[in-house]
Amino acid sequence: MTVHVVYMQTCANWGDARCYVPDKPGDFLAVFLALAALIFAIKQYFDAQNAEITTSNLRDMTDSLTKEIFQLKENSSTRALPRFPENVPAVCKLLDGCPPDTSLLIMVDHIGYSLYSDQDHFDRYLKCLQEAIKRGVRIRLLAYGYGRAKNAIRKQFPEISAERAKPRFANFFRRLGKTPATNEKEFYRAMLLAEEDLFPKINGVEMRLLLEDPPAFFWMKDNPYQIVFGFRDEFPGTGFSFQSENHDLCDQFKVMFNTEWARAEDHWDCRGRATQIASLLARPHGFGRCC
Image 1: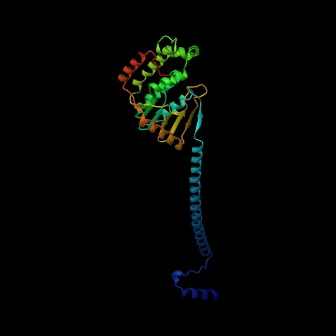
Image 2: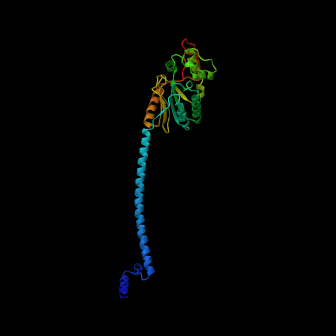
Image 3: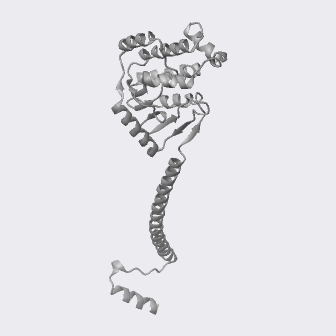
């Protein structure tokens, strides 16, 4: 009791409101629980601070990893495709992936790409191109002019004796509803007329004629970049194709296209082209366009 009284007197000097001396077992328990709650709250505070630091570090690590994955994707974004004409499905997939207002650049030898080599692939290609036009895709197309077409067809088909034995030869003329050609001149003429029939079917495409043979043919869309490109198949053993989403590569092809576009010739309208065709076919050495 003496100790208790002395303690109460000492506490009295501090003020009753700030001093509490437990004198019952329940009071001691309440004080213990209060201190435990305070310690737990302090621990939670520091744990939260550490968690925030850990989360920030994790976010930085995730951002860094994402960049590395994107860089890896960029470095491995160019892939080989089947050779012509089996690359056409990849071209169709690119065309189908163009939403409205996408810019699409096309540099090819003939607008009827694969028309002769694989008619099923061509039908799908033409349909995809027409659907892209309907969706409002902005398409600029560079294709061979007549001089380039003449050189290309003669290099690819200098003579047709072996070609006449192939199924695609008979299928092509069956599709046209014409008697199969018996010589090169008839064959070239049929190619030309088949190509010219396609111009009214791609109204809405802005087109110009190449003045020189391009190093490659390609179809490229933006937002995001994607390209299918290949090399001319005028000679056996060529016709390799690739697909890529690499920005640097696409930028180079875009520069190539814009350079050729700036110096290319505007194409004739359909009536003007028909007049020109009639004049060409009337010459002793008329020629057509292969595809």
